[in-house]
Image (cartoon, rainbow, N blue to C red; front, side):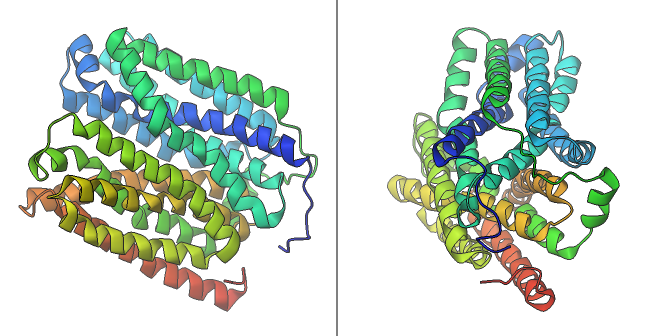
Length: 400
């Protein structure tokens, strides 16, 4: 697609307002996804279960994302993007409000699965809407602005929800998320226009177009290459306590620095892809592999570790870069591919901690998560090379 093939459908200021509204939905989803991590003891005590069982609630949500992303994307392929976004946010609000009033553990487990279902499809469709409102050479920047909501959830939303749950009750945290989701649905209705030019396809047409290798390569990069960051992030707290030998008070600081790196990386990822296109993905993967390999060497010094957390988290820039690349190669399956992108990242969220746990369990130490992460980033880089050759061979997109 050439940069002159399409002109923006709205004024730049209106496009920015729409991006902010869509980011608000991302803020709600990001807060809802990770809120239980700060409230495990509270939920466990209230429901009479163990903290590992509360961890299963997080897994149930992630499973909902992986299951819901392709299914809802297929079912919503023929619907107007504006009204699909409203329905998805209303669905998300319902899942979290239901979680707030769950009477027992089994009920909450089911509601967390339900709450995860619209996650991937919302982000996928929101990215398509944001990209459609700006010139082609600014699409990745627009997508990164939508994803800012997710990174702000790590910086602000989750700490706020944790404080709310600790000082009031954990149920208020889910009610808070549900309220933000409802506000987003109303705001989308008010400010997002109906795009008469958007392509709508039948579910079967999306499924047929989805089978191309050009689509599956970036999804594999996200699922494998990105898992290294989650490997390090998931075990940061015990690394600080057992290797760096600092007090528990430094754990929120480490998480905040990681979130700050993700915030900056998200912006950089959009900027890099708008200028380097798909080659920017390779550069981000190479950066990630080097930083993750250096991470174990910094774990015995607090300040070096915090700096390395920031540098590792910059690989969040892979998110908007891969999302925008999928828009270039997923012709005929835009909605399904965009939603599956977020399902792939949830696979990474499961794969990274699992591989890291195996290394730690084998006796390689907490710092080994960096080496494991570097290996997954290199695996992602290998997939990138395969994708690059595929694009160069087919001419699906000039890898420039």
